[in-house]
Image (cartoon, rainbow, N blue to C red; front, side, top):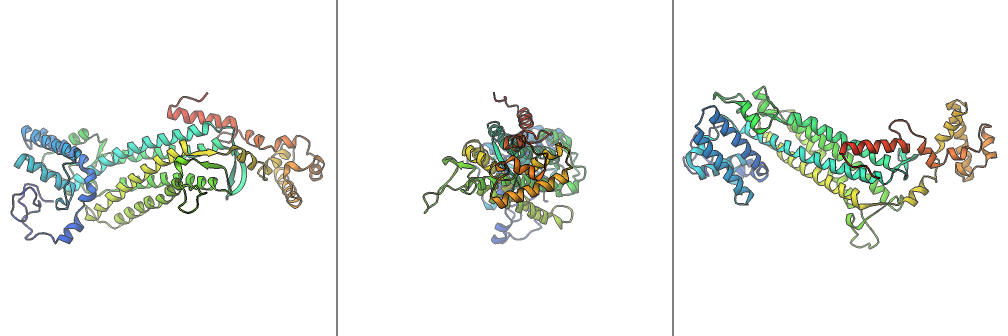
Amino acid sequence: MASSSTPPANGSDSPDSKVWSQRFESALNPVIAAFNASIHFDIALVEYDLTGSQAHVQMLAHTDIISQGEADAIDQGLEAIRQEYRQGQFRPGIDAEDVHFAVENRLIELIGDTGKKLHTGRSRNDQVGTDIRLYLHDQILQIQTLIRTWQQALVSLAADHVQTLIPGYTHLQRAQPVSLAHHLLAYFEMAERDWQRLSEIDQRVNVSPLGSGALAGTPFPIDRQYTADKLGFVDLYRNSLDGVSDRDFAIEFLCAASLIMVHLSRLSEEVIFWASEEFGFIKLKDSCATGSSIMPQKKNPDVPELVRGKSGRVFGHLQSLLVVMKGLPLAYNKDLQEDKEAIFDGVTTIKACLEAMTILVAEGLEFQTPRLESAVGEDFSNATDVADYLSKKGVPFREAYNIVGAVVKACLSQGKLLKDLTIEEWQQFHPQFANDIYAAISPRQVVAVRNSFGGTGFTQVQHALEHAQSLLQVPKQS
């Protein structure tokens, strides 16, 4: 990359001129200039660019590459641009090409030729790498806060439904009844992994490439640790080629973002099912549902449907960046400009989805407990407990399993449920059946006895709820 102190291509000293060297004899074709520009989306990095530049210029003074007075003038000019941006006065157009040139051009307008010293000892390549890492580190912290709020909504709802039963499914077939709180806390655990995963990725995001130059470092006696410390980075890239071309951290982030969307989408799918007339497990409150333009009776689950749909765009960004990276030779290539829109939209999408789903769970769902109570008593999801009952009385489990299969077959032929059989009918299948079979197969008992660690037994669910509350430092509900 050319030094900012090199005269622009057209020979003009205007701050608005491009900073390309006199190697070029003519300006870009306007269509190519527009195609090449990234200012319309990388303006989102402006404050991070200003922060990185302020650290860089103070390092230049610290190492006596420029004077302290020059550094202070540049620093003050950069801060003035920050205030202009916040007040809506700094809005560069496509002629600026990207946020980095836009800032530098405005700085030169504000403080004159001293501003041309800002770019000493760095390249746009390590500069943009620094900006995107500062941005993503900040966004990860914000997303983690949203995850904690999401978990709080799940825990609060779960605390109200420890004793509520809901059918549990495998293969989308009724399997065994579970505590509704147990079901909700499964999503808490997914979110906890999401939170932890972001923390791990952030360690690799928070590594400074500043000072790597275009690809080979710089002959100036810079102090990379100084800028890293100023910017809060926890480590430095040890190879300049890697420093300017690495996007593993961005791919890892989009992997984590995709998993967040997977988890949100899975619950969304269930909410959509539960809200249907066929299930009837929940009602959607007016604050989180919409209606039909022609069918006045309908209440549509738009929030979970949108979350389910938006998961695809985040997955797409991950695939896009993987494809961008797979064929890039070292070091920097313009293809890497494509990382930003993927990251920016990925961040925006998961933040919006976390916020929407948090509101939906916190205030938009009303579980229909009578319907749930009825649902867990209308099937054969207690059949395994019949086999367990016989096993506890000395019948080998596989033999008990086959006996219960015969019992279920007979019930189906007679239009009965297990609870409807008389004791005489039970004993036709095996003499070990006694009157206590009815208590053993009641849905509440089926749930209560599953007290293995991590199970749906009410005692275990209460322990899980208390553990979740301790992670969130939330007062326990009385």
